[in-house]
Image 1 (cartoon, helix red, strand yellow):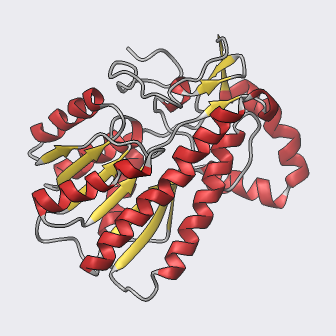
Image 2: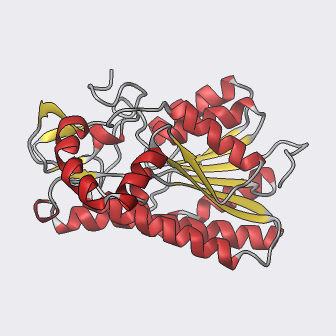
Image 3: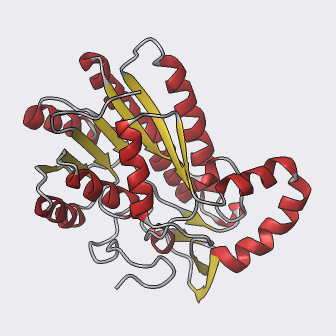
Length: 298
């Protein structure tokens, strides 16, 4: 158990421009933390930074791309130069692609895995290097219910999140020698963020979070609590455990139901031509504004 800090925490957030990352930045800002915010889009980051500064936080903005690991060193360098250390690193950066596995282009599939899984590994290398030097620190990854179950039309994302769950477990084992270094996974179910609409799409219909849907703020509160009192895995979502139980305990029933349910609840009625979404390039500041994931962001 880790006591809440008596001095301002230094918190790095990768994936801070929208969704859970944005909500986490705002939540940490209200606690008085010093923030280093990173994502691919500087304009979107600056919007979040302004909102955090209005809450009294000191904020640095460093654009970086998890699919390009060489860009991550600047995040550590900025945090240490401006604030002297990193207490917490939260990684929520992720992209998605919809479509049957054989319909998703190989380069799109590989870029999702490169960002969501290999990018998380790149974050871990930088963060753990800093934490080892400091002899303390908390690394929190944004996981997903989809890291423990499978659904059709989301093969790249599920591959990434299952891999991330395994990576986090290994890191937890390998940091047992450092009592003040913690690695955690915060795994929500469906969350109302722009990731669904901004996803690459080869399914013909725009994706949406299936109900029940939690707010990014709810997940952000869980992340802040995890920073205060680190736990190996934090599950967010009222039905997540029930769905996971069905996946494990009644696989035939689960497999029979998940396809129709995904087509009904996980894909909107809104038609869309095949496109790469924000997999290779960041969405504009307007596109990543907060709003309901099942309708255009306005």
